[in-house]
Image (cartoon, rainbow, N blue to C red; front, side, top):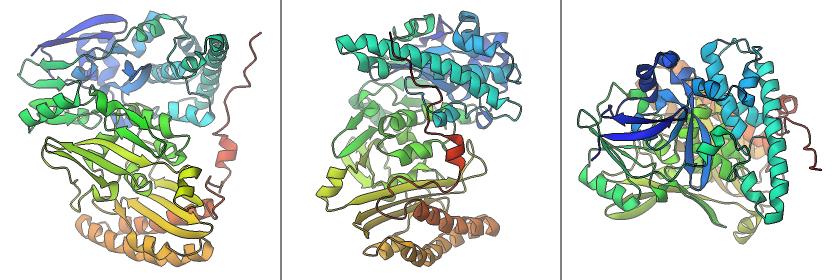
Length: 535
């Protein structure tokens, strides 16, 4: 094993030797130089310490906004890291730095650093065009002092100028049939010092690192090697995005860590005409980018999940393995009729997501077993027609104290398959009612065979109320929190009512607006004017 690895920090190579496998990037930077002193004050639930990580996602180089407090140093082996200080010092004339130099954002130096990192990632994103995406880009800026209108105006100007460059580059590439490389970010349209270094990245090599305390960090490249390591070190802790483990750095001892990030088979998204198969090491951001247009309910919940730096790191496999009782995604995966594919040295097995969690707040994972992938069925018109269905309606709703970086109170996800106006099959799932996400089968069975209308919606509410009450009674007895249980019980009803009024008939697969918020926010509209044709 080797006792060192290298990374690139603010444009310069760094060799890390014998440093603790538990050391976070924020801790490393504070020790490295006093210019990084701000990194000692970051807390993930307050927005953390944003940095930019350059990485390869299959064949696409990407700059991703990350939180330095949630990154263990060995995870960065072979990667590029840019801090706000490095971005500022490396190119003062970069559009992001010019925008920040105006001084109109009414934030301190640390918050300016967070803003710089968020602007920087947005500048290089090939998909950033709509107002709602702009909101998501800056959702890690947890502060009351920021001049938000000024931030939006400045960001709109910066991002619109990039879109003009991208549009012109795509037109030039059209003659050679390579315009798709421009729109998907596989071609360097910027050709500045940052993007040139990003496009020089190579695939990550296997890593077998041991620190000065003899703790080991493994990053295998193949599924075979991963399972071999699991067999050799049965007590080793698997690490995917690491958003959960890094929070425990310094509190928990992990003699051996095995990262799944480098395993090619776990980093794939397979798009079949019938389904998506999503590898367990794929980040939530990549999933939303891939399936979000066809599965808007997934993209919708992503806007309520953590913050942009967390979504860029968190993986679907890691999320499921933690068995988060209040997690937003589990009910939606149940409503989507998704299955979890499990792998061990003894072979493979699979289970519906609704059967993946046990009653005690854990999962059905056996010792030596990992989450290999999640299979989500698609619901195209042709697939529905082949099953004799005329429509599939699906949506999800989450309620919490605020939009980001808090545990939600209750999340509900609902899906109906209809033959004309009759419910053929229903999926109703919630999290936040107990130790584990639950599927309310009594309500599903009640809906089957009934016409989807307001009378049916009202008739099923007592069934939901009774089922939720039984679940919450057990939870409140353990937690001694009767008021919270009553509130959650009401949310069970409220969220399902909202589902009906947004989807009152088979033609309302796309949700109807129930308030003026979308109209005022214009979330689906571009934040720049129409692109001027290249002359």
